[in-house]
Amino acid sequence: QALSEETAQSLKRNVYQNYRQFIETAREISYLESEMYQLSHILTEQKGIMETVTQALLLQANVGEREDPAVAGARRAAAATTDPHTNPFLPLSGKDASANEEGRQRTLTTLLEKVEGCRDLLESPGKYLVYNGDLVEYDADHMGQIQKVHAFLMNDCLLVAAWLPNRRGMYRYDALYPLDGLAVVNVKDNPPMKDMFKLLMFPESRIFQAENAKIKKEWLEVLEEAKRNRVLSEKRRLEQEVPTRALPMPAETSNPFDVDEEEEEAEEEDKATLEEETVDLSLEWIQELPEDLDVCIAQRDFEGAVDLLDKLKEYLSDKPVTQMVRELRAKVDERVRQLTEVLVFELSPDRSLRGGPRATRRAVSQLIRLGQSTKACELFLKNREAAVHTAIRQLRIEGATLLYIHKLCHVFFTSLLETAREFETDFAGNSGCYSAFVVWARSTMRMFVDAFSKQVFDSKESLSTAAECVKVAKEHCKQLGDIGLDLTFIIHALLVKDIKGALQSYKDIIIEATKHRNSEEM
Image (cartoon, rainbow, N blue to C red; front, side, top):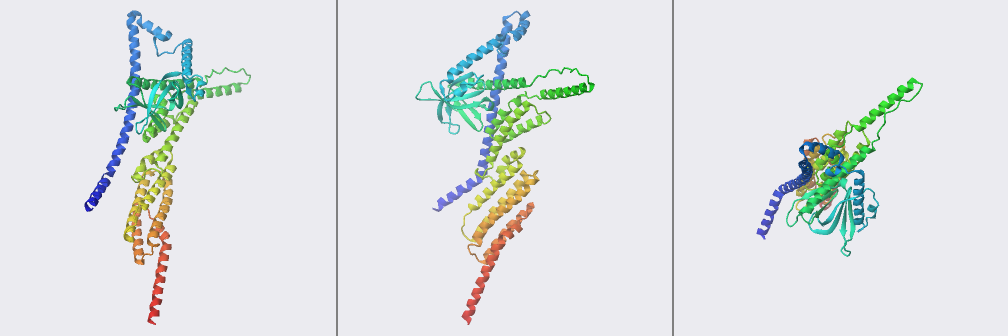
């Protein structure tokens, strides 16, 4: 028995000694995983771009080899401007494009008629099929097979339909994801799990397995190409919506003052239109910003998401507010709302309270950068209050009362001191939040006094023991003065009633004992 207890104590000490190292290792693994996902995503995009450029160069070289060198240059120039069939990267003519799109729309309609629950998609104009195929969905946590699905990639969205086992060739609508908020991540092969890729759609992610490596590669390429085409088409649509203003014609009037006023108004309007056209939103990082924000949120890269938002804010700080800017801000604001919800959840008391106040620093600092310092302060203090309450409840009441009070004071005032230092670090530039901390400190002090009084005064301890316990509490409270926080007056005000009650009770006991002794002597 003694050997068993000694072994248990030894194991417990080893676990406590290595606990911090375990936490740090898990945190580093999480960061490394998110970085690997980002690198995989970037490499996939770079590979697609390189293959597109290679195909274009090979096509130009083949055309040059077939023709006479003297006329090759002239013919390539003419073909680039007149013949869309010699260059697949040029737009088709109106007739060919409409015929091609009608054919793809008919194919899409034929396929979607086999999917139950998606009649609304059949009535959507301008939607056509890009790619489709069978996939197998796996659980993202346990990597267990969930179901067989059939995916339909369209020009603006991805439809996932589940197989109906009792009806061959028929599917049931499962989910529809717009390409604007969809991110594709390659999953490294880990036999027997191979030929997989992940789709990130905040706040969820799904893993699919292709039939073989070739089909997986095709899915990754067509998804990236469809997203790029979607961005380009959206850009063209926004550019076409900008009204083209004609030059103002001078109005015939007999009043020369009216002519001057009209010319000034026309110049101001032309200047405003020119300002609208000068906002360049065609930069690649701006076009991919909503998608990059979704990826950062899904991978819990909160710092990266806020860095992107700060970069956009700085870029648009001196730009006029045009219609395109408003639409971009609307998309970004939705991501900011999602990011704020995730950060709020990180600070909720329902999360693990281990790690001390420093564990909340990451979420608090990002909320402050988002301009949510008041909410960050409120959530931080609620989190710490729950942690202090849990620590007090976990104290075991055993042995002498004075020993328990020593433990209680050490746990409470150490937690209060750590919280005050972390608060001062996190909210150094937000002096308006310090009043909230003082209010919080008073409420937690009340919680401490309740536990203190219940053990010292309600249990009818001797006056000397109670006095020693109060002395211990006051000594611990004075330690807060090292950081400029003096709460001794609060602990005096909260304990004065119980102290008076104990003195009165002790006084009554002395009086009763004196009366009893006098009666015996008489």
